[in-house]
Image 1 (cartoon, one colour):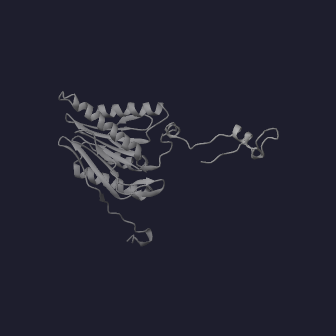
Image 2 (image 1 turned 45 degrees about the horizontal axis):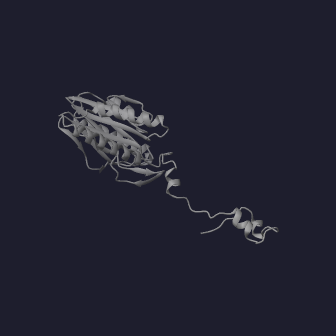
Image 3 (image 1 turned 45 degrees about the vertical axis):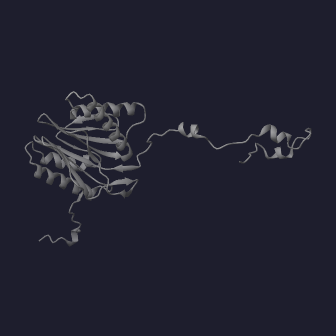
Length: 261
């Protein structure tokens, strides 16, 4: 362990002291490394998103709701984690997809798992509806925002219950809404106009799959934080299903190589 001097002249001692080291021992103490109490007092908030996912898109139709996201989580601007699932189920009839800070999304998943477990422990034959989970997340996000400790995510909630489809969004400040089409991140500018122009209440699932794939392909072309490996998830009266990741076919021919004739 080292000793630190307030003043180098202290080594010279005091001319009026009986010992040349008396002044040193009187004014200097042994300094220790900070203990666990010091580190536990430091802020552990997410001050800036680091590992982030980009757009999540969704469409609500009469008989089902479908959402899509790619499997990339970027570390800053580096496409580092290429096989991360950003869509998961919440209970039996709700799906959630997230863009933004992935560690915050993991915290939300733990929170929702505990919510579902507590609900099941009541054993009253009732389960949480998609609208209730959407409302719960709205309150959570708004509460964290008021504490200046937000969860840096935009969340897409999709559900189907009692023959009614549901699609809603919640962001990091607690803003929430429901709509027939939803897109987060860069997709709100590029993919959502495509979704709106093609939306019909009576779309079939194959038509919805093609529409979402086309939107994700455009995002891959235009969004520097996107890749062409995606997952689709659908929830309907039969329950929920999340596809295995698969890659979209893309076309990178330049304009010079395309024969206009």
